[in-house]
Image (cartoon, rainbow over the protein chains, first blue to last red):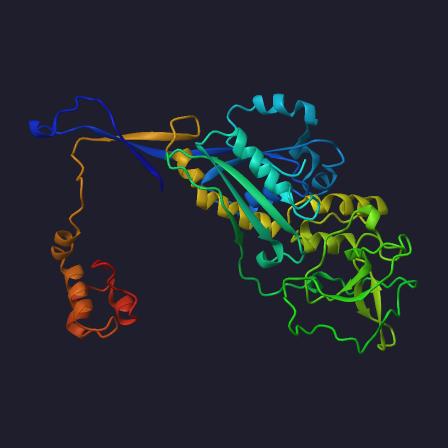
Length: 109
Length: 313
């Protein structure tokens, strides 16, 4: 379990005052990890998330491909609904449209 | 992720240099070379993984290249071969059966071993031998499909597989099926699409698989990145939308240090166990000691599974 401990300024007293300090614990409820994966031909990262990743974080895979041909093996194994096609010249705008993306995984493009 | 065989040798180094030039010093660039047979894949696919992380600690780590390895027990692609695949009548009686095969000798088990070279009629004057010109020993790893320009007129863009002939005197050869090829990249048979035996799909695999990542290599490299960079810890301790937290309040001062010694000595069971571990072997417990330690500790103590480490048990 990951615990984030922070002090908060709720009637905080100096240690020698004899009164009790009030402290707060931010106990982790969940982590959301958004992972943008570009041109993962066979969906190897998708496989890692579904079968090997720790279940504690919530992994959200965003698979994009530069063209439909690069996505064909992925489609046949995982389905075309799991990915989208973004041409190379649009990739920058697409990246900007995902401000909360935590991991960007670029395969050979 | 950079495919070693599909690039000039220096490309991964160029990527590294460019990233070093454009990123500020608080970004850490790490480049790792992975050899897939060492990680359990049956394909000889080497990959460079360059990962870039934001260094929140303020320490400026040095760039480095390391070679990861893990233990695998079976390196051969033969484990994925289907015994039901028939031989092409045009591609048999290539090897005499007395040809040595399935013997390791002094060959590195993580490197493909060729049994025979087939001259390619598509490029008869070429001095270059591609892996499509080779028949490979199934005990050793497979090789990736080659570029179309390097194909062999018999085997196409993939190497040849030896298989016993009908009269058990000679060896026949054939190419990998699509399913077998995908399995050498550690893609399980259950995930391999079935009705995909047509030529177009074979061409697609030959084109794209050298640009893919073998699955066991991906698992190992991702686990390494997640554990070595501590990215999940950074998410948990960040102040953004990465994590949801519940706040719990308490009004008692938390101890700044933990007094383990006093805590141990004030507990009868722990005191007894620590005294015993200090005076005799970890599995030589007397009945009074076990009785004092309590029922929850008897079996671990008798088996010697409780030890003192740094004066703690």
